Amino acid sequence: MQITNKIHFRNIKGDLFGGVTAAVIALPMALAFGVASGAGPTAGLWGAVLVGFFAALFGGTPTLISEPTGPMTVVLTGIIANFIAQEGTEQGLAMAFTVVMMAGVFQIIFGLLKLGRYVTMMPYTVISGFMSGIGIILVILQIAPFLGQGSPGGGVVGTLRAIPELLSGIQPAETLLAAGTVAIIWFMPENIKKLVPPQLVALVAGTVVSLLVFPGADQIRRIGEIPGGFPSLIMPTFSAEHLQIMVIDAAVLGMLGCIDALLTSMVADSLTRTEHNSNKELLGQGLGNIVSGLFGGLAGAGATMGTVVNIQSGGRSALSGLSRAFILLVVILGASGLAANIPLAVLAGIALKVGIDIIDWDFLKRAHQISWKGALIMYGVILLTVLVDLIVAVGIGLFIANVLTIDKMSRLQSDSVRSISDADDQMHLNPDEQRWLDEANGRVLLFQLSGPMIFGVAKAIAREHNAIKDCSAIVFDISDVPHMGVTASLALENAIEEAVDKDRDVFIVGAAGQTRRRLEKLKLFSKVSPDRCLMSLEEALKQATLTVTGSASDDDFVGTTAPAV
Image (cartoon, rainbow, N blue to C red):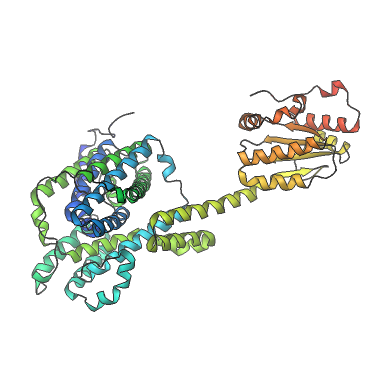
């Protein structure tokens, strides 16, 4: 496997232009997410540089742009607030950045175990629910800075409880700046958006207006001086008391980063008509987050907005992501002083608009029309994400969604478990098969299974088995069963054993491949004579009929037996 991402120089102009455009978009977003997280604008900027560089260099999606994202920032915000509250600012931040490194380690483990293709195999109702929940959290957390005040403690619940106090202490100047920022991003004409990112326009316009128009400009809360130069190395910091929660937080952050990145990789694939390497992408994301955490940067993942803009601007190889990281590095080292006057309210407006965009409005409007069960799952995941915890929301949402899916599949599959003792329109038998079944006069029962037999079908097998009353022979036809789960196999075993115990003649038809191997492991064929394990349903019905009618001879039992597999 190639160590680095796909890098070539056949599209230098497009890749460089894509990198520049992505960098312009990344700058205001990185500042906004850094401030929103509680780690400061510097953490957002270095997260954009380091995650973006290493993910581009070692990832598996050539056009993917990686940086701090809304979902990752929301989760990391809670982690930072929790550790600072318990351990103080310096120790708390060090532990939070250690969680970022650990999240990167988890992502590398996921990649090495080749779990990339499984990460995004979630019901859309769950994905939509937790993404919308994250968007709502990001919006709620911007209420305080939007109103010109410091964020109250207690996260989402604390902010909601403090709304009356926040409204009573509103700072009109900062609120106007925040509202103006949202308005610029929201209502900027599309033809201008193609030329310059609205976030950058809002950032510059809001800063200039705050300095020149508003009286008492010195009273407006601003970012302040951003340290120049390279960041200091932050060694991993652990606490025995908090180790368990650090591991859980890292797993959640890492998994969210995987989902975020791979969903964006799928978007990139659709735009470039290429196919990314999921497992390799997770390795690149993991390395990026480890390095970012080591130098005090935010956790990051694939960013949809930056990736789409990069592709639309001509980016086609990882050179675009590398050039974007280099441009941001130059800005940090050479022009960080220009950011000191940016109002926090402007950054709150940018982050609030990101939160609004994360909410899956399209699915929210029509989920109940598609499936009311799916809609309930989505709304439940949203509530749990906002008010309880992300991992709880996803876990419960996945559990309920999978239970409903298994129930539906089991009910559908149960229809393919049938037993008859005479010709039946529901079973497609050829004339010879029907003739032998009719000649048995109800003394031969055909027990037919078809399709994959998952554990939910065991109940149907037991139901049909319990319905068996008077018969002298049973033909178990599993010719159309490509897969038989353990529970279904045990249910079939129980049916065969009971038939043998009641001295009924048992025939097994069509056992092959995985189904035969599973039944062999259950030693089922030791309970059924080898000459009654056949591959032909007609032959099995013939032998069963001749056996129960007493007109069989040795020549009649010369048939096609099931081959050993």
